[in-house]
Amino acid sequence: MPQINWFAVIAAAVAMFALGAVWYSPALFVKQWAKAAGINREGPPGPGFVWIMVGAFVLNLIMAANLAFFLAGPTTTLGFAIGASVAAGLGWVTLSLWIVSLFEQRPFTYVLINGGYLTVGFALMGLILGMWR
Image (cartoon, rainbow, N blue to C red; front, side, top):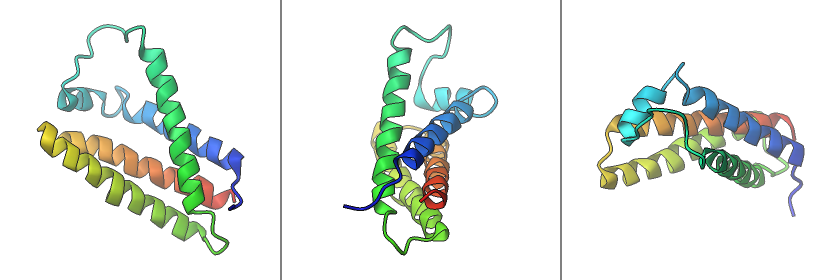
């Protein structure tokens, strides 16, 4: 079984979660994202919002652990970790999201905002996991 730094996995998950808080904030893309997703952002979040956030963090943790296993090889360099993470975020996640958005008939803005977050988030996780091995 590969050697995984679980503290790095947790740090990577926290970093991606924090990135999401900024990415989907009024400072960046929340208005454009809500419009592209067809979500009404009027009023405060509902009572289930806490569980959405808990679920999002748990899923970030699982993604970070999965990425850590991919990057656990003894010859993995920081450059490879970042490059592989960007390739996963852009090549697998964003393109998969794009396919789904085609069938859901979402605007391309939806792919750009969500895919951008996921690609940058994977790069950030790869940076942390690659540095803290």
